[in-house]
Figure 1 (cartoon, one colour):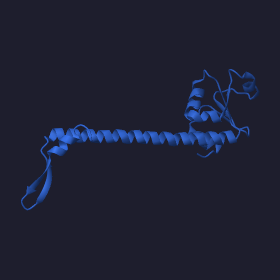
Figure 2 (cartoon, rainbow, N blue to C red; figure 1 turned 135 degrees about the horizontal axis):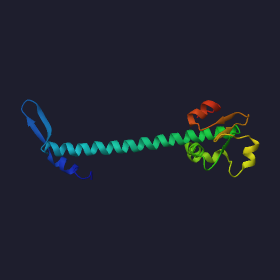
Figure 3 (cartoon, rainbow, N blue to C red; figure 1 turned 30 degrees about the horizontal axis):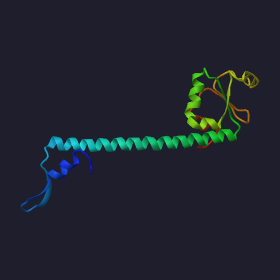
Figure 4 (tube, rainbow, N blue to C red; figure 1 turned 120 degrees about the vertical axis):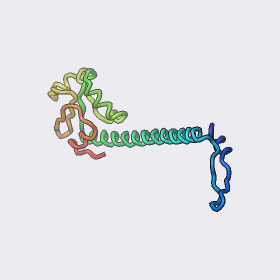
Length: 150
């Protein structure tokens, strides 16, 4: 069963003989009703396409975030932040679930570690080689400044 409206269209489609032109299909459904059904079909297909595109792009983005997080972890990167810091929250959110792979130090809970590393701006990344990256960075920018690939 195709759903509401489809049965009506199939009922209205009939063979029609035009002299010298052969058999054609035509619809005796009023034009506005026929086009309403066609519009509904197109809209439904566009919604499904948009949903699939969003799903695929989120999977791809998630895979990229995982790849970058793994690379940062392999390079000994540590992210310093604080719970009250909006940019720190944003920095963690861009990684999604992949943030679990990154060593994160909350400077409110571990003040001594942050003091020892002379953290003066949040968020701050410190790579294993001592390189510092201060402030929020998109995943794309982090790949550029760290040399990590996705």
